[in-house]
Image 1 (cartoon, rainbow, N blue to C red):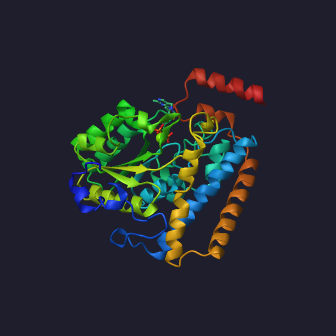
Image 2: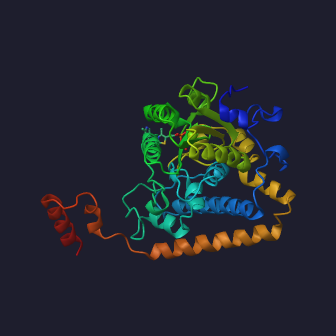
Length: 374
Ligand SMILES: Cc1ncc(C[n+]2csc(CCOP(=O)(O)OP(=O)(O)O)c2C)c(N)n1
Ligand SMILES: [Mg+2]
């Protein structure tokens, strides 16, 4: 049993006997624990489900596009939709997110249009990153979605800093920062958590414990009993949540976001989930994990669990599934077709946005490049 002792833990009765100290709202058969059900409106529940299915369909398509050589690289998120969307759903529009390369569900739920995601993966001239960022390392300024950092955990001190800034400016906003189990071994993780705790920053850390950091299992990542208890050392609560249960994630995140907004400081939510696919399209997980493990987690698919819950509430039918699946497919197929026609960014964009006034050496290189490509 995990030790959970802080104030927020007392407000959420996480320690029900069936879940072994892990917050769970929807059981495997779709039955909710009535006392914990956040009782979201029908339309919100459907919006969450639709986003989860769109994320899965987009993810599946991207893997196949990479195999066909139509995009160069992709980082899949299948299996983690509940952790990503349940948490993001607790935020308001003006809040900030600092995601990882795997958080496609966060981008989709925050409203990044599918064509823009493809533009980025293709690195075409519609890409807001102008083809300069590694694939999956997107960022969208207008929606307070901070560009993904490839250096694991490097965004966490930045996230805490943003939250501290919000507090100093007396803004009513919250930061949500995502990281993996592997990120907890980085110095930046500890610096970010320490500052967040000391300065009571309005931040919620979402730790997506997906079992693996590339080929290193989370059992080898720490000698602690859980990742959540690391937050306790920094003076704030870490909760363990069934990361494949979208309502459990939402419930914990909602409480944490509300507390942060009220000035009550940070919370960490460890979402226990699973990376169903490879680490990236450059990885072959069959070399380091068993088929049995993969099969076991397939049975805990977060989308299926939520579907059973919706069906019990008469919000899901086969016709509904067919209609959203068709809608998702059409959106995805049209978007990739259109984005593949968009030309590459102009060469000059490679030299822009660093200096207010372009220095002579870059001007020279730019002129050479333009001459060669003309
Ligand atoms: C500072 C740093 N060290 C190592 C790497 C190489 N690397 C890329 S992803 C990764 C694993 C991260 O695992 P985790 O935090 O659990 O996130 P996940 O990939 O499982 O979502 C590593 C070690 C890196 N990008 N940055
Ligand atoms: Mg991981």
